Length: 312
Image 1 (cartoon, rainbow, N blue to C red):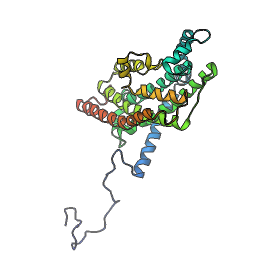
Image 2 (tube, rainbow, N blue to C red):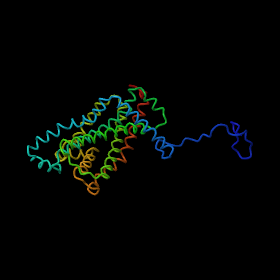
Image 3 (cartoon, one colour):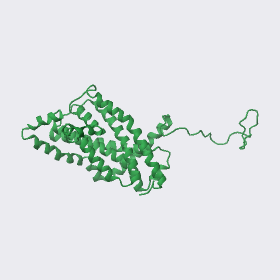
Image 4 (tube, rainbow, N blue to C red):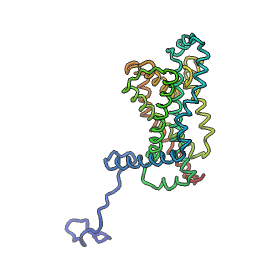
């Protein structure tokens, strides 16, 4: 007979029926694919996304400006390009020798709007836990059974919805004001955008770890963003860069993302045309979330050991 009075050996008497509900051992990890766990994860992500949207919508003027400001921010680049192209657009031929297209307005508009989309996603994932630190709710979130990646996913989902609407608004306004021509292969576009989202979501975790450990890491993040702004070729083709810098540009995920999305939206490229870009983006989409989560876990452990997890 065991010390609790319940026999677990055949032939020995029991003290009576088991009292209370049966408690099963908890064996579902943060990446469980059990239907009940997945349903719980979905509810958590939707709740976090709803919370984020309500927070942002509470500041009405700022929230509304997000759908106009990105369009205004790219106008100087477009008008500068028009000036350089000349009154009859003769400079567009020279531009096509660098970029492979004469549609310089579409080239700049797509690059700038997608740059806003990607950087906003990085910032949202990277600073979602910092926002909780400033609000004094991070430690309470850490006490919940929700995995860390899911807490970031809820914020990223809300931000992605806003960014999607924002990007569509920018492209629509550019189309109305400048006659933006778009030749869209929708299945290919959705695939490229989905792979890009996964890759940037993974890199956002590296940002999140840095911000959690160093607290005020905005200057570091801004420095990285400015470097990537040059290497990604947001408002100019990568072919104008020096050869040695062009090689470095190919190491940045955003350069592959912009190249693929421009090819789909401007040139109407096919799956076969983008087989290299799709291979690279698929590898990034598979590897960056794992790498980012591992790096984030390291910084989280260092922060907990230092005792500054909830510190402002």
